[in-house]
Amino acid sequence: MKKSDKPSEYFIGAILRGYDKEAHSGEVTCSGIWNHVVMECFRQTGGFTFMFGWDTSKAQNKNRIATIAESIRRGHVPGLRLAENERGREIVVEDESRGIE
Image 1 (spheres, rainbow, N blue to C red):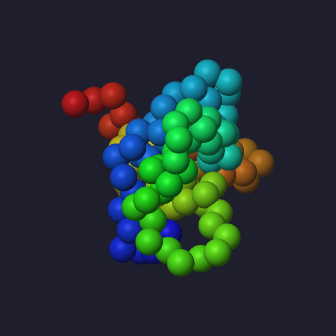
Image 2: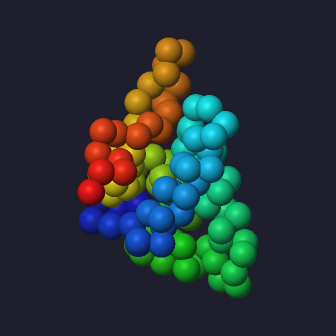
């Protein structure tokens, strides 16, 4: 993901839907969200191309879990932020603005 890339609304929505599904299980990680994003991609023909068409990076191997983390870190995903749990593991948490309009 290049610094100039802005994730599509579909990708941001997939992150938020994945977060909501994972939140019922306890701590939410980017890898947990990734599992739900993958399932959305499998539901349609060309799903991965559609989901990541906005990413202009030329890298051969893209770490999509890191793409999720970077999108949250840069503030592209409203209402979510990254934090650390008590063991120092990076987790995804809601910020104060989530759900407030």
